[in-house]
Length: 85
Image 1: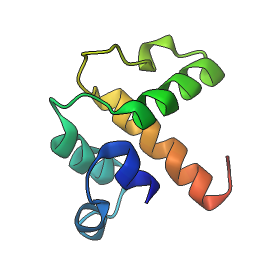
Image 2: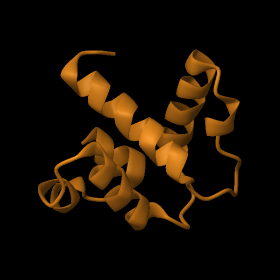
Image 3: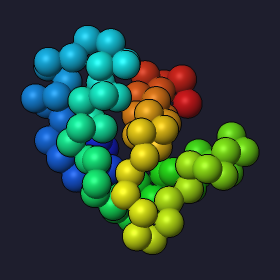
Image 4: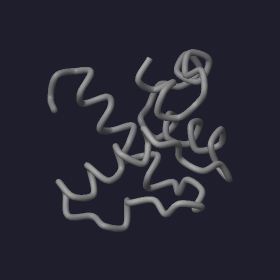
């Protein structure tokens, strides 16, 4: 549910065809490349950027997803799910 809300897509098909984090990032990146992060994603990226002192992760209003943002968001959401964040 959180992946769907963050990336505006259905992650089930992506996740069933991938096994490594690198493959997951690449697959999500292919789906969102050229799209602008929604408000949930922008808030998540801002939170990560502040916490980790990585201002490059924050998204601008009309800027499409960057691969480093996809990776950071996925890592954060998966860490939350596993209870490590």
